Image (cartoon, rainbow, N blue to C red; front, side, top):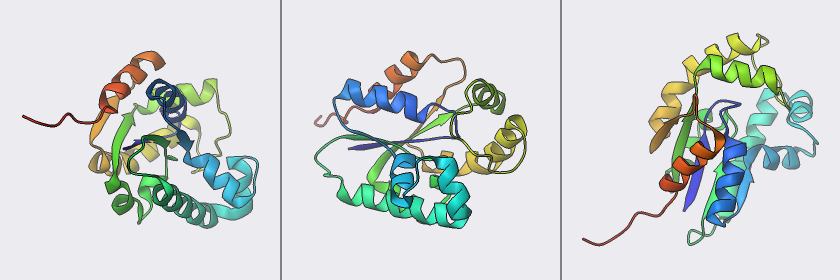
Amino acid sequence: MILALIGLRASGKTTAGRLLAARLNCPFIDLDDAVIARLGCATISEAWSRSGEAGFRAAEAAALHETLRKQDPATNLVLALGGGTPMLPTAAPALQTCRVIYLRARADTLASRLAHDPGDRPSLTGAGPTEEAQSLHAIRDPVYQSLAAAVIDVDGLTVQALVDQLALLGRPASGGA
């Protein structure tokens, strides 16, 4: 089973995903890492700057499809998608093979996290963190919800509490009656 984590930047996909994969004793892939490797860059900012949005998104789509194609369906994987990945036209059909979990956070939570630790996250809109989070949330939230098998509101959750909830969702469904 592939457990695909979606959400806006700073929602906790990578942090919780790594810990969840360790708990489930399975591989973890951060799709952003696959994209920058595909583009021959060291960081997301460099990839975005060198390739532009169109080039970055094309590499992102290719990385998603390659990752899913290579995955053995008999083994587990935790996959953290980039915030824009679910918006790709080819993402919805590709993600049908995954259990998609949406890590949902309010815009003010995301802005606070980004202010505290901006990391390697280039601005997508040119706006400040709060305005950008609000804008992207308004656009992406309905799409994320439509793709998700489950939604976890991460506001106020510790990383450990989030991983605990994800671990429950990451268990294979029990069979039989």
